Image 1 (tube, rainbow, N blue to C red):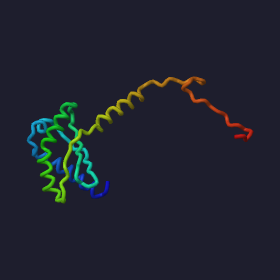
Image 2 (image 1 turned 180 degrees about the vertical axis):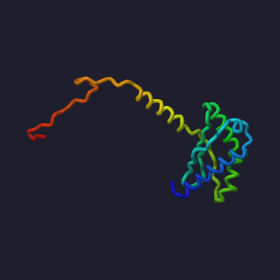
Image 3 (image 1 turned 45 degrees about the horizontal axis):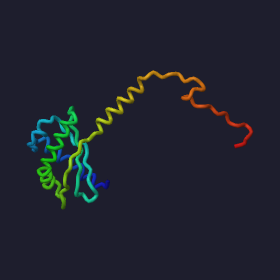
Image 4 (image 1 turned 45 degrees about the vertical axis):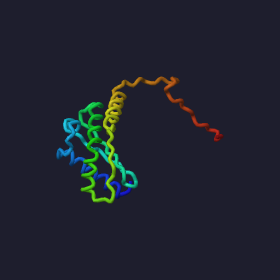
Length: 142
């Protein structure tokens, strides 16, 4: 991303977060969800479309989907807010996606713990798991 795109994405993320913090979104699917965090925003190169990724702390999949629907419903209001605050020639259209990074991180962390806690079995020489040791040839023939 270019520097301008990154700056604009950060501004969009800030405006969206501010709209949530001030209670600007009246949809009960959003208001009653708990703590919603916009993790990052991706913009297209022409700055006409923005994908806002969010997560809801402590929510299951169905609750996050309801929040996504509520945010999508409030998309026109949020786009209007962006237009007022950004001052760009074109206000990007918004789509909202659930950010699954934290779920993936938790799964990887659990797998790493599982591997770390598993007892290591000593490998016997000649076993299929043990690497075969090859002595270098002293004759110089390769």
